[in-house]
Length: 98
Image (cartoon, rainbow, N blue to C red; front, top):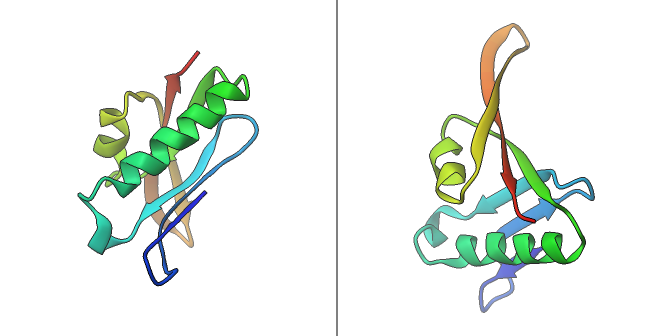
């Protein structure tokens, strides 16, 4: 799902897998606070519900965690991992929608 500006430039996008995993949800920094990200998420949830998906889930970064919580997701687990020897983590979060 994409949102573009008047010139056709992508300013927001979201991608949900058939199992309910929200793989991507991005908003261009200049569009933060305009409501376009909220609109994309709301439409993703509506489409998921219509497809019979009962639970959405995401792996949220530390920076995204609060935004995801504001959308009603709860933390299921913290995932610790390393990338090229650098320790990192994210949070598996889910939301029941049906």
